[in-house]
Length: 79
Image (cartoon, rainbow, N blue to C red; front, side, top):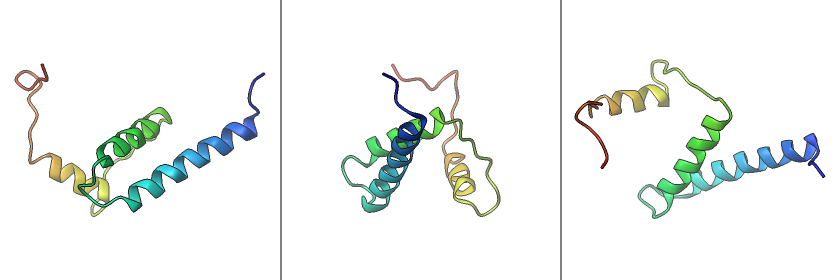
């Protein structure tokens, strides 16, 4: 028996809300935060959410911070 569209929508909403609550409630540096952020990242990716950084936005701040750590795909690898 397949789940109804309404049930799946409710589950989707509950997951998004719980992830948001968990991230907001967890202090930076708390053990487990990285795992929750990774689940949230995958949830956003799986739902086709993309963002372009606009000046002053959190995405822009993250982009600027990441640019301080250049990545060389030829030299940087995880083995």
